[in-house]
Length: 99
Image (cartoon, rainbow, N blue to C red):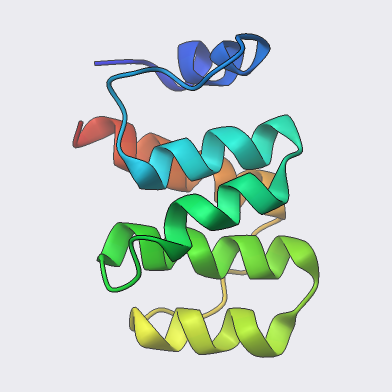
């Protein structure tokens, strides 16, 4: 299992780790500052709960709270009372723990 610190550090590489799924790939691209690529990762896996949660986070990061709210409702979760950084860490840690 990759640790959150190792996953964070992997952002300095050219591509995301090969052993992670689309939700973690999206978080990786978002951390790297490529929102569009991150969005493509989750958009192409719409309907998968992990991708939909990350999709919500991305629209929150973008500042589109109406769209983010729709995605959070879709996955049955409230908009988190966390900073974007804290939410990213929480999502990454949860997804990595199930990898």
